[in-house]
Length: 219
Image (cartoon, rainbow, N blue to C red; front, side, top):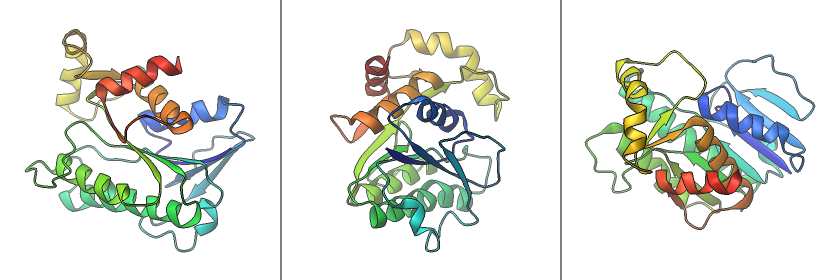
C-alpha cells in the first residue's frame, strides 16, 4: 500500500507518519514538505514542494495512492486572513484534486475542525474556511473523511502557539470531564485518523466523539 501525507512535521501529521512507518501493510510513504527534515526510513520519500497550490509538475507523486492524509494547517491569528484561507482551503483542495486526477477513488482524510460550517456563512474564518474546504473536496471522486476534533491536547510537550492554548492545556482535565464532545489527545486523534484512512468509516464527517470511538477501535 502506498500513501501520501502533507503536514507530517506537525503535531498530528508526525504521529500519523509514525503509524505509517510502523504498519507492515504500507510499503511506501510520500511526505510533501516545505523543506527537508532529515528523517530517514526505507519506506519514506520526502518531496520538497515549492507551491502547495500547483501540482501540475508533480502528478506522478499522486499515482497509485491508496490513502492520503492532509494534516497541513495554521493557527488562527498566527497568519493573515488571506494566508489562512490559502492554507486552509486552497492547499487542501488542490491536494485533493491532484489525488483525484491521478488516483480516483482513493481515500483522503482531512484534518478539519469542530464547528466547520458547510453553509460557509459563519462569521468565524476558521469555521467558514474549513467548511469551504470540506464542500469542495466532498464533491470529488474520492473516499473522503473529514475529521473534526475539538480541543486537541498535545501529549508530547510543546511550545503552545498562544495564551489561549496555554490556558486550554491547563484546563484539559476539566474539558475531559465534560465528556467526549469537547477534547481529544493528539495520540487519540492520530490513531483515529490512521484507522479511518486504512479501514474506512461509516460517515464522511467524524466529530470529536466519533474520533474517540475510532481511536478505541484502532487500539
